[in-house]
Each structure stands twice: as C-alpha cells, then as structure tokens.
Length: 230
Ligand code: URA
Image (cartoon, rainbow, N blue to C red; front, side, top):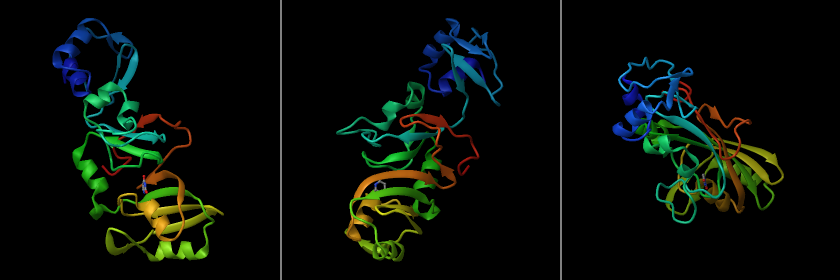
C-alpha cells in the first residue's frame, strides 16, 4: 500500500493532508524519513512514526481502555465527556466506538473498535460473551442474596429472570459477578432486586480478556488480532 494511503487508512486526515505530512518529512519508518507519498509499504508488522510518535498499522482498530469514572460511553454525551475524548484523534477519525456501554460511574475494561461486525459479535446476546464485574455494595452481602443472584432475579422491564453465571463473595460488602447478558444497568438492578445497592462498579474481564494491572486508569492499548474473538 502506498504510504499516503497507509496514513489515510489509519485516520491521519484527508488524502491531501496525509500527502502533505509525508512531503513535509514528518513521517518516518524505523527512523528513516519517508518523504515520498507514493512509496510502497509492506503492511505486515509495519510501524511508522508521525512527528516521532510510533503508530502500528492495523487494518481494523481494536483497543482496550481502562475507563475512569466520569465519562460516558455515548458518542453524543449529555452530562460528562465521552470516553472517546480519551483516545487520540487518528482513532476517533477512524470511527472507533465502544463495544457495549458502561455507565458513567462504572470503571474498568472497555473495548473500542472500528470493526462493526466485531461489535455485533461481542454485544449480540446470541454470542454469550461473559462479563466480570467487581461490585462494592452499600449493605453486607449475605447468603440469601448470593443464592438469589445465581438462581435469577426479575428486573422491572421483563418478567424473565436474569441470573449470574458465577458469584464470588470477595468481602463483607463485595462480590464478583459474571454475567452473560448486557442489559441496561443490569448489575445495579440485580443488586437492587436482592435488596442491596451498588456503591462502586468495576468491570475486570470480558470474554478471554482481563484488565491488566499495569494499564493505568484513563489509558488505552492496542489489542492484537487473535487476542479477542477474531
Ligand atoms: N451493569 C450496570 O449496572 N452498569 C454498568 O455499567 C454495567 C453493568
């Protein structure tokens, strides 16, 4: 692929802007200035630098964000900034979107991608992707609540009970829940249905992925193809 097309595909502006960056000598590959927009690039393992910042080529973008509280997953946020404001402009230009939603006050693992079919596969109820939530509750968690979460509770918008596939008591006031569904405010409503209340909610896992300990709050990283459901 020609270098100008590489930059364009990775979200670095219009074709004209990409060519101009290259002609200005702002693009390097392995430290070598590449100032010919028509230079052919092998895509496999390609890492180029724009103004010194390394950028690995990805045909599709798949990223993991350690979501802070105080950010909305909506593309048109109403009360708080969007999680997209935490992502660099080339990724936003590519049209990345959150995979499903976390509430504004929920923290932890959020995937973002520009791959529409992947979003569908990860969010469709048919595909059964487990989500792990660490919950801190207002009231102590007892055996009755634990059992009810596993047996299934009825939420206010649907008579079919929803159950956690796993419940682990992690403290007097805390639980780890694994859910297969992704219904609106599901954890908060399940905890309310058993007579408790969520104080803090953190997603620590999704499918085979776990939020790495070394990914600081508000930071993101690339996920390689194959790591998640490709
Ligand atoms: N359940 C909730 O209640 N909120 C979230 O953000 C995610 C799951």
